[in-house]
Image (cartoon, rainbow, N blue to C red; front, side, top):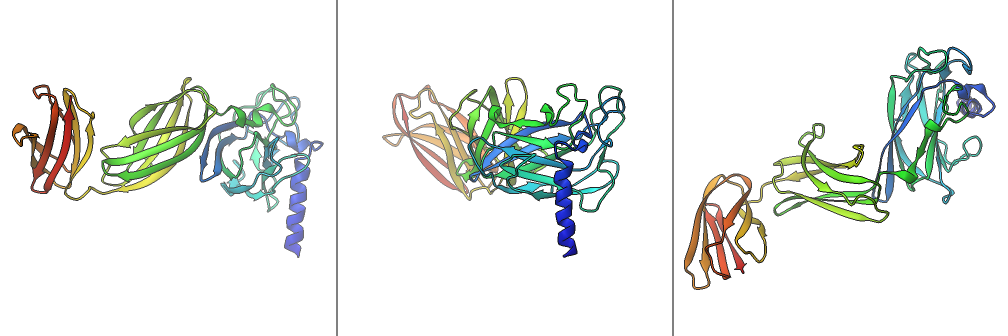
Length: 373
């Protein structure tokens, strides 16, 4: 019973500290809030945002005691009564100079001072004297804080906006009132609202498909691959639609995948150089047994045809081209490597008609019908 009463009292103090009339809401200044990205997958939205709690004032309008003790995230919508928070992280954050732990709680929709459709608050359950200390400041304006935290919230509906309550400063030169404008996240002007990212192992490699629900000044996508899930490298780019308010689908084929486990993500790059990223998908690729055709084109062919095939062995293969009478009209020797192989076959000396490709070696034989015009 004592624990329940203590927790209830803590919640009361949490909301009291964040009340509009209480001076504690104006503890720190020079905060920074950034919307990193929004990922839509499985019918849910995951919001990534970075918050840096700033230093306070030592001169005029210092406000409260020069520290921030509790913060909260309020999510707002003009069309939805309740936004359900499925998960959020981190669950615990730690103050900068004091080591105090703040524990996160889903407070669901709230009235004043939030008036929000969903709320997550971080509170001190153990009565620590201070949380985030305000750092050295000038007379008129605090300095940017060095400690930043990325928060993630998975919700069932995209809000119009979100606001961070608690760390706003009394002397913010932009407004100086609670809450400050730099604590607002606006979801109505997202450069890209991500859809799902899917990956699939196909006959000729790994195919990636992703979508966007909306785009604003989107330049291109950078397709990233990693063997360890940490160190990513670019393996290609895809031109973006640019600006759109409808579902746009994109695709990319990794025709030379890593043997074993691969991690993929998509980096979106705006016209101004700003970037956001998708979720990450992980796939397992094994070399197909024997010989297998990949892409063959163009179809029909004219002066050339591009061939791709895969093999599980490094071996010497013979490629032969036959006409409809069964006469061999072209032959090549190919030193194939393990995995996917590609080649450019010149057909300029062949007349228009139907031909048959035959690729064979120790691991098997492949045939393909080809039309040249």
